[in-house]
Length: 173
Image 1 (cartoon, rainbow, N blue to C red):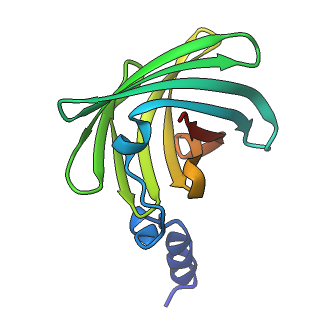
Image 2 (spheres, helix red, strand yellow):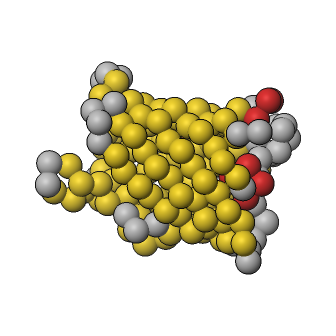
């Protein structure tokens, strides 16, 4: 047997991705539609691949569930004074599955949830210095007691890690 084969198999095993089912028994149970139906405040930051905080932001999110759809109106205010708006339209695609679109999302986002976790994957068309880059997001949300929702999104392009986005959400009473 060649020596490279065991090394290649070990490498592939290390690349396997964890799915939401690993969190099936975790509580409180997270339902995307329930959590975001109403007004939610969020605070976040983008870190480059070295871990340096490049930009901070706050987000006001207004969610509405109507006719089997969740509409999220997200208004971002960044630490450099810039502002951005994103409007998501999300539908259920079966038990624990979601699909979503937004103007700057390339194609369709796909989400899977179980227990307290949701994994959301999509490609975002990001404008940087006048150029548009298609960046892949692997987004994980975890609901904690007290209604706190934590989010970590890994950003990549061509399989190379660009950085991470961290966000904390809190529903308004």
